[in-house]
Structure formats: structure tokens, C-alpha cells
Image (cartoon, rainbow, N blue to C red; front, top):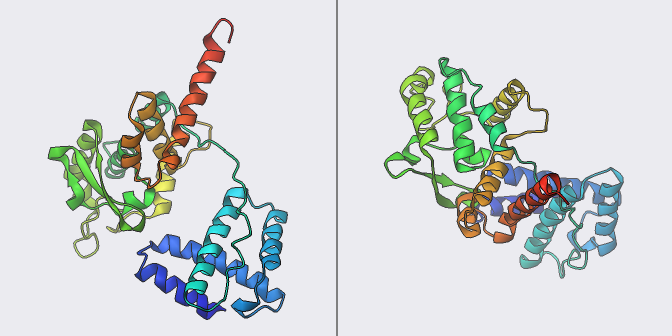
Length: 296
């Protein structure tokens, strides 16, 4: 069945314009499902029944996979079956009556404003890489952009006179995001003092943030940068690049920002995704009441 998978992934890339990371995720999840079917000697899409799919998800649960990861598998496999059905490779989709795993409502971790300040104060701005890291962290928090958006950001997408940047999000959707004066200041410092020392004319293209080889930073580089300064700041909680995005949204809503405006800045297609941050805000308020009210 790998020929069907290959065909489906080509459609996702060429017609849906999905990123390489997303396509790789689909490939991994669906391949895992197909390998499971092969163990039962199922090699034809029309042979796949509802009970095979139920058995696959039971096997995932038995391995200790989280409900969120299982839900991702369900979404990937459902999309694959939809393609097979539309392409008339199968008469009906066997996954339609298989409910997706119920997600536990775990709220994303958020840094306090003070913790953000502690992290942002750690890079050595007198060092070329330290200055780059400072600008990177400032931008992560100022705009709440995803790591994939950050590493692909180009100088041509900076419009500092208007205090905005242009970001290409999931599915190459373009959006304009405001950027504060602090991030503008440090990015300008980086552009004038650090980036020229990192730039390699034939390699750097127009990417904003560069590594020592003169090419754009990788996703792993951003993880390492965040991890380094979180440890230096003495913060013990589990912090990753996406925590800056969670904190950006939560701090805006705590400050009274409109939910729709935050949705636009984050690039969420569905406002229900943004609403999770109102839950964080609510939990924070409840905790404050509990901690400080005489009868809390």
C-alpha cells in the first residue's frame, strides 16, 4: 500500500502546500498504521475494516501513547482514507465510525513576566552569538511566532517603520504580526553588529537569523538557545520554544487584549484553539483568589 501513501503525500505537498515537517509527520504516522496492517497480511485498502483500525488504536494505547499523539494518528489516517475514497480506491472509509481519542485538557505551561525578563537578560550582547540569541528570544516573546516561522523569517519581511513583521505560517498562510520596540531595538543591533560577521554571501540568502556556517538556524538550534538561557536563569520548569508563544498569548489576554486580535496574531484558523489561553488566565485568577483572599 506504500504506492497509495506516496501518491497521497505528493498531493499534500503539491496541492495542500503543507510544510516538509508536517508531511514527514503524516508519513511516519500512516506508515506505522500500514506496518500494523501488514502484520495481519492486509495489503489492499479495500480489505481494511473498522475492527482493524480499532485494534491499531488499542495497540497504541497499550504502548503508553498519549491521547494527543493518538489523536494526531487518527487525523492523519482519516485524511488518508478520505483521499482513497475520493480517488475511488475504496468504496467506503472504514474510519468514519471510529471516534478520535478524547483529549485531556492539559493547559500549556506559561512563564511569568518576571521569568521572561530573567531569560531575556542572560545572553551576552557583547558576543556575536549572544547578540543573535538575545534578538531571537526577544522576537519569540514579542510576536509569539512558531519556531518554523522564526527560522524561515527573512529580512525582507521586517517592516520596522510600521512596527510589524510578515510571517508565513502553516500552509504558507501569510499574516502580519505587530512587533514591540524592544525586539526592534535588539534585531537592529544584531543586523548591524552580529549578522555581518555570520553572513556567507552564497549561503545566507535573506534569512534573518544565521548560524556560524552562515546558513539559517535549525529548529534544534532554537531549542538549544532556549534551553541554555532557561538554565542560566535558574528556571526549573520544563520550558521549550513554544512556551514563549503560550506566554505571549496569555500575557496579552491577562492585559485585556481582545481574543480575536490574539487569534489573528497567533495565526489560529479556529478561535477555539486560542480560547485555551483564556482558560489559563482563568486558572491564574482562581489561584490568585485562593492565595490572597481572606476566605480563598
